Image (cartoon, rainbow, N blue to C red; front, side):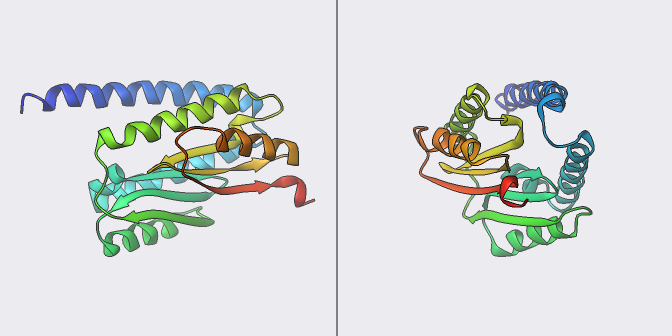
Length: 190
């Protein structure tokens, strides 16, 4: 019991720092993002609606599954112990207003402990930093998630050189076992 309060403070502090970072990065990314502020707002609304639905269904869903939303597409990562829970999470995601696609990368196993996810967080932070420092890469157009040393990336590449630079940054990062890309190449759709 004596360890719960410090853990609560740590988690609350992380949430405040994360929220401050997200607000600051949103303001900064509006100036650099090729997407409109309206697109970003739609993704935020989908994310909030999906998290709210999952939380009302079973609080553990929100703790054990990472939700990434980009261009109305939802990516689900994490570990869930039963197929029934996984199917329910995917069903809720598809029924969330505004969702156009769902990528289900949920693993069937017991959820990881906080200490088990620290390497994933370090890998993701390293790649985000590297992308932000890479010339001719609009890093705000990419969402990076790392789960069990597998890197998932969503985004929009504006040209082949940018796509190659992003993939090179990802593949050169220590600790990445596998890369799963959901990057759309906007230059190929013209």
